[in-house]
Length: 320
Ligand code: SF4
Image 1 (spheres, helix red, strand yellow):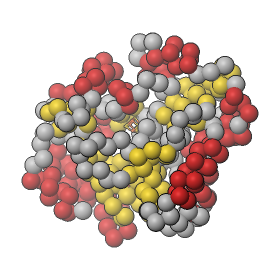
Image 2 (tube, protein in one colour):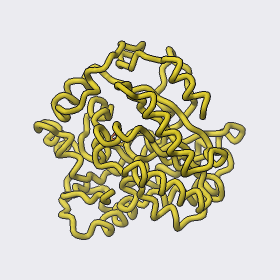
Image 3 (cartoon, protein in one colour):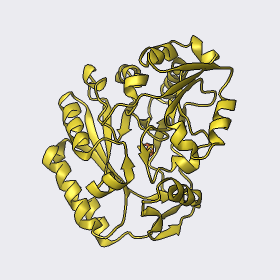
Image 4 (cartoon, rainbow, N blue to C red):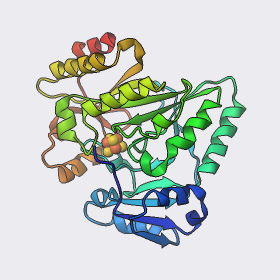
């Protein structure tokens, strides 16, 4: 996998004073930088262009986040909640998966990193400290890939020491990258999980553009495990196609051939989720992808999901 570097950086005037912004800029010394009064006009201008996400994925925006950093994962009352909590430090992704729901969900196509990280950590510490009896499962990979840009953001270098001293929370980095260099320089003290989205070779090749290969992901998992991290795998999204069952069994075997099953903290399964608007985006941006022509049902929250939950899929969950 090639490490990502943007073709241009926008930074808001107020972010220029943030030490984390300066640290990120220092890691991209050859990238042109434009200082802007605020982010609104550059987001609006990029969003108005044809194929805004292709353009936005090549750029980086450094700005301050003005809302809450720590939020429950957006569940809805119609479904059972897994109580996952999200710590938002970035929005957008340099990878380009055909099925990525962010293409329909976000109104900012530019890969955006928040620079007021100290405020984010203070907010998180205050919430965790106010509920000492509750155990929190926290992830940073809801609106971005947790590690694909970690060589630029260095977020892991701040988060790992923070979570090591917090008693009532576990952090999970969720990724399709093998960008683990920063992780290997820290001792996670058993507090950090690194989770890889995993799929069949066909789904990786046809739908997960610019991501690390499955072999690279497994090699990275092996390395972080040896360095003291916990590892997890997410079959998400499971995609239905001719021959999918054999391919998913092969993918599971591939994991277990590399990582002993007793060393895996958990494996989760997820169906393909599809907001109605995403169909047109995928047809436009990825005309070769066939995922929009599968069988879908409209779910309780107006997202389309794959209809099939066959006995074979149930067996998959039992097997892991
Ligand atoms: S890795 Fe995740 S966030 Fe990034 S493009 Fe793929 S689905 Fe979207």
